[in-house]
Image (cartoon, rainbow, N blue to C red):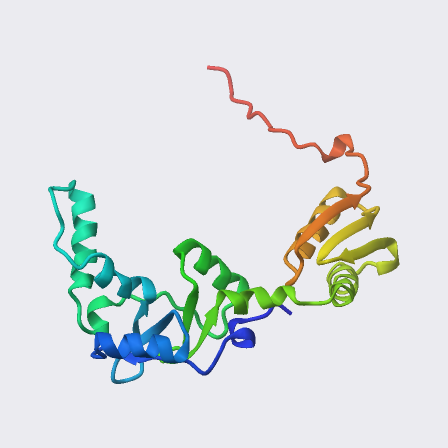
Length: 232
C-alpha cells in the first residue's frame, strides 16, 4: 500500500501566531532548531509559513531599493523590501501556505516540495487546522526499505495479486533499491504495465527492464480507416 503523509509526518510542530514579533520568531528558530514554522490564526488555521529566508530579508534588504529597476523586478523588490520592513509574522510570512492533507500520498508531497521549492509542508485537516508537518527528510524515509521487503512486495502484491501471474515466471532481484526484472511476459503491454507498477513501489530507486518481450505481430498494428464518400 502506498504510504501517506500521516505515515511519515511529524505531529509535534512548532507554530507561531500571526502577531508574533520578529524577535520572538528569531528566538523560536534558535530554540527549536528549525528553519521554518507555520503561522496560525486564533482558530489554529494555517495562514502562512515563515522561513529563515523570509526573515533574512531584514538583514539583506534593510535599506531602501536603489535605482529604477524594470516593472516586474521592481514589483518583486518592493515585495521583498516590504518584508524587510516587517515586524510581525504576518508581515514576513509567505502566504498562502502550501499544505498537504494527512491522506495525501508521500509522492504528492514530494512533488509539491520539488515544484514549489520548499523544504517542508504543513499538514492540515479538512478545516485547515494544523495537525503536523512533513519535511524532505520525512519523504526520503520511504527509501529506507530493505531489498528483501521490496522484492517480496513486487512478487506477491504486483506480479501475483495485481496481474494474477505465478511469480515463478519472473526473476526479481533487488540491490540497493534497484530492481531488475527478467522473464517473458505474455504480451508487450503486460510487460510494460508490470515495469510501470514496479517503478511506483515506494522505496524503489530504479528499475532495470530485462524482460524478453514477444515479437510484435502484424495484428498488433493499428490502421486508420479511410471513410468512403459518395462521388459527386
